[in-house]
Image 1 (cartoon, one colour):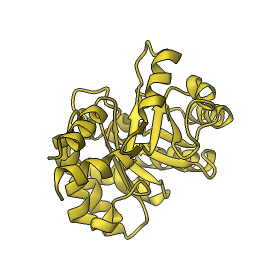
Image 2 (tube, helix red, strand yellow):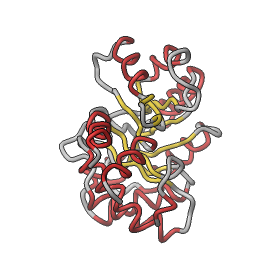
Image 3 (cartoon, one colour):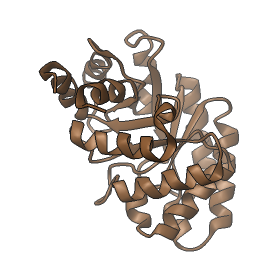
Length: 243
């Protein structure tokens, strides 16, 4: 796939994101404006839940409103997670990006992690549920595969690599493990790469990987997302340059 075609597809699969401690309504408004481009709309905007009501009149209905839960620390607190999800839904969230208690997984307590994810699935009701496994902290193939298998078991809608708040975020190596695990399961689970994706070249690596493992027709906003804040500018530049 040439870069222009890839850039157009990636825009449609982009979760345009701002999750900074000092975010303001002005910054969120700018994000909402940027989400509708001359080359199509992004799949979603991802923001702190407190800004969700503000986006109601500033975002086309076809662009989903996503927010983060248990972010970025990934605490092992089921009740707190359930409360955050309930509040986010009340505030108008369409999609919920929930951080797995990855330290608990690293300690070997897979049973608690499964219980946590089952509770997240139930609390999210019919809303899109993306589980952030924090692959850069899990590090090993076995850990990343195990986290992915737990997400698949509770029928998460997406497995997401990272919060973008750790030293190592998304990597093609981790993405490969996640995608291969999804493929092996045969389940209808999507994939989201997030963290450190700055330009068209970065984003295209994940697009190409997903296409090679899952097939070209699988890659759409239903199954494939890129979470980023700055990549949109380079995607638009790629399209306008024509190469």
